Image (cartoon, rainbow, N blue to C red):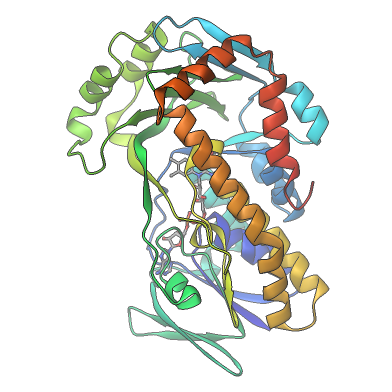
Length: 384
Ligand code: FAD
């Protein structure tokens, strides 16, 4: 049995690992010659780390995961700590730690795990057809590939999604711009073993420790879509948006490198229930594209892969296995997209009174409520 896997991102490489565990041969096709991730880092929450362990890639988490032992919110303007707590109770409770990791490192190590020379780069799918005995992928360079089934992990702008759903979906602008990158960890910005977030005015600034004494940072600002901003003005833009904010925020802006800082208009896609048509299945962002507000998009792709493997282990035909995968994933995936959307609106001042109430709540928070929310998200994954 042979699978065609489209996309060598987190979803595609996790799916390849999961199918290999079931003894299924995979050919992996990736559109670009060289993968350049859109974000500098991601937080892999314990549900994702459990999936990576399950898929035989736990060592990547050990190597890349930063020492994120605590969490804190601080007032953006005054810098005053609103809440600060250890994540140990959460880690003990769910049985795994969160791992903020360099995204380039993660993607590169996942590809290496599979075998870089086995990924066919510069192969952009434009069309798929199905027949009684399998699927055919047509690439923009005129080449074709045949397999028994296809896993389309071709991201939020998926080409294969149109084939599965029979319609094209528009991405929805979430209302804010995110700048992200990496800087050397600096304790004058925030403790280097802590996920620290400065909040105010519906904006946020966050630093998270990744391996090798580096901070993953991001800035979020509610803005109209399509603004003409570029690297040349990046620091001035951020200085403007965060004028009057606390010293650590100013320091972070001073220290970042505009050349390696990403600016992304954040989108998601309205959730849908159909992940499978015949022998073609969507996986990862192609199936459920979320805002990054609860840090679960990549984790969700890893969960998809784990469930895909379980579905092939427990079913006899390809069609049954893929439908079982769809049945076990669509509600969970939708739940995460909608949870992120809700969190996005509160964090980014969609209704400033609600956002202000959240800021007030943070000042009363001892950590229990936040960790209960995180736990709820984590244990809803396929590995508990
Ligand atoms: P992608 O990573 O988009 O990979 C798709 C791959 O398919 C790409 O390599 C692409 O080149 C290839 N491809 C595209 N079209 C074609 C084609 N036609 N033919 C062949 N190949 C094609 N998630 C978390 O879990 N935690 C976080 O903290 C987190 N933070 C985030 C922060 C930001 C700012 C953003 C934008 C996202 C964040 N995410 C996070 C979400 C996470 O990045 C995605 O959910 C994840 O990358 C999805 O993986 P994927 O493999 O499905 O898609």
